[in-house]
Image (cartoon, one colour):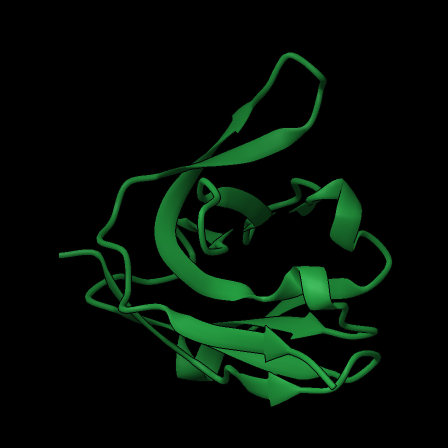
Length: 127
């Protein structure tokens, strides 16, 4: 089963930073991308990032470009989402899942989740 465990959320002031972790369980990151989505209260879940272990460019939602980066630790089979210059509008529950990347009509690679969603991790940006 393609399971993941998210962690690293919390309460942070505007302008602060957090690093989210997505630990893969039952699969290796060599064969799957990792999709990061978030869902704020009253809003639909939106794709934040699509991170592939191959040569594909990492996708980032326009509103987080330049502030969020993604990386992985092969030894820990974990992908990280480093979030900086956080804004109140980044407040949401963040989820990750195993995924396959696909080329969208705008020429960028997005993620199609194929694994189970984790339990999510709450990120709250507030003063």
